Image (cartoon, rainbow, N blue to C red; front, top):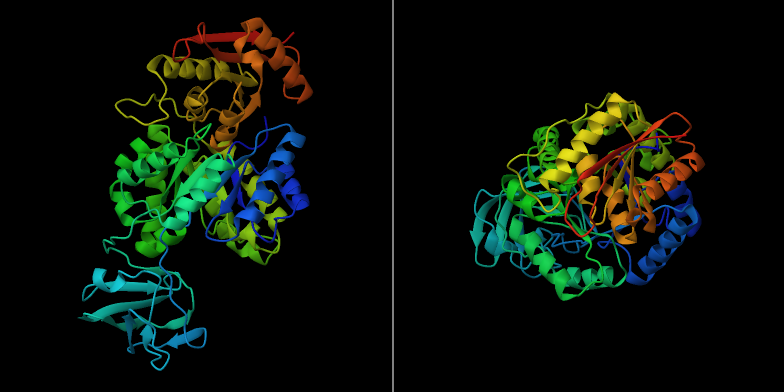
Length: 477
């Protein structure tokens, strides 16, 4: 077995931003590092990117980088004393301009808030721990009553579940961050505030206008009820998905989140769209060396749901134990992975950017059956764009998958694909015999192959034609 199959995404922040800590985390098994554009400066992020690329070269394996756009996150404006305790039944008003003499006047970073609100609309603050409801609408203010009391702080998030906001999904800051991400060759771009397929199309056009040498994968963050309702259309356009349970759990009733997570992951698997499960997976490890039993179960259940990757956010960015969080995450996923059931169905009647040709899918399925029948140690996939590797990955076979590609960019994008270990080499354009010699030599050096074991290859007889039409079984001598 080649390491853990469920990929691990770790967020970079003050707790792990030094080259030494990044190196330890990558060596422990981090597959993708996430840069959160809502925090941090480009100059510092450039240092992180350079360090991660150096570390990947030292480890001789691809490591992906995800740039997560902040999106139009609505936040509270400055409060008079920085914090405000709001009690049940009291009234507060959202206004256009702050009034230092009126402690009940609240402002936000979204100028159109008052226009978008109507009487009886809910307003959630502080990650949903404080709830208000609009009781009066005036031209210059929206008066609200407190239904769930709590403590407010300047800059905290504002959520408006069920309200159709006119704010665009990509802000001017996002455009600046996107240009920086493309210029620095990031492998994935996370899009916040996705509501419909056209949001993905808009981002793709912006990326194309920047004329990148290699286009990054777009990761659509599902955190709005509108996105859940338009999920099938979004999956047809995006390259990957993130189940962003933080805002999703505020935007919808929290009891719906586990079921929505399963529904989203199942839909992604059906369309061969890689999916990341994120937010508060090992939240208590911000301050503790061990997670709670519920958190361990949460990670394991995400694996069993079929997620391609699990993500650490504050645990590695600002937590006290970033490396321990990574190693614990990997221990949990490796324990859960043997319980997964292989997927033996070809996707029929579905479309996405990642679905391979019918021939490729049929050969991939045949390769999985052959590998399992022979108890092979390795399924080897030749891939240029990554589609063939994804076709094998989504079968969720217990057999380890080695992808060979001549594109470093494809190798880094496959860091999100469940079960795929990627090696960059020109041998994938050679003869089947040359490829097998390379694989056997690699497998022996990695201590995953020995004499008498089987290797199953998914390849092609003609690189000029799309798809893969060759399956080959090799016995290690």
